[in-house]
Length: 278
Image (tube, rainbow, N blue to C red; front, side, top):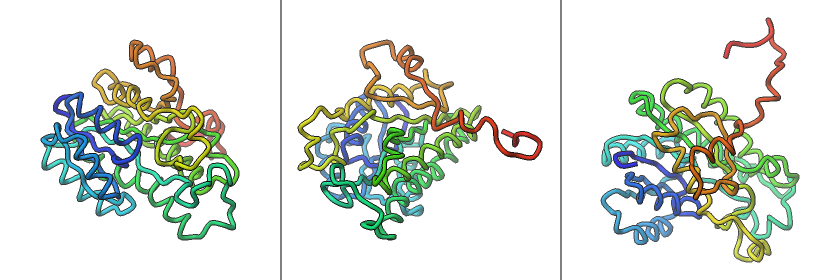
């Protein structure tokens, strides 16, 4: 990935940290965005050997103007934007530490909590895609990778607002893949495949005593989808826990390829004349 510029949101967290490192080690320049000063400082210190190709910028992706400023700064420093990894998200433990075991009902939620989750988990990904898409379309080369979640989690009772926000992100990714098809910009989804060992699982959770998916599982599929070899691959969803990093990566992509979202449900629309134009 030498010469490519990647933007990673949620860069100071579990998935973000390993993805930033992996991209740097493969020659990319990386703009790491997060909302925590301490997390970015820790990331910068851990990766100081790559300081010439790493920028760490405090960014609230729920703020469109902040997204635009951070993206423009990355483009000016590194010479463009080629890859966007929409990884940042709020987890249910932002509501309550034991929310994975003692689920959160609607009466416990406030409008402010709901709005903040949607603003970060869904609107934030749209904001970043919107500010990055112009240079990608102009250069006819771009990779957008959205990190969503399992369909079970999206539909789980008492797991809102996280589930619906990720379902919206999944649908958005499907629509963007169609919109940008043939432009040189690809859009794909990668999910961990179950609970992962990230800050979204509280340290006190009993899940910590079980086998969690390591953040490193996300590296192989995401890095490969960022490559030139994946230029024609778009509109797909991959489960990272099932991806074998030791196998031929193109073979793994074909083996694990599934469509984003729920295209089978959209085959018989109620529409004048049969179907709307694609």
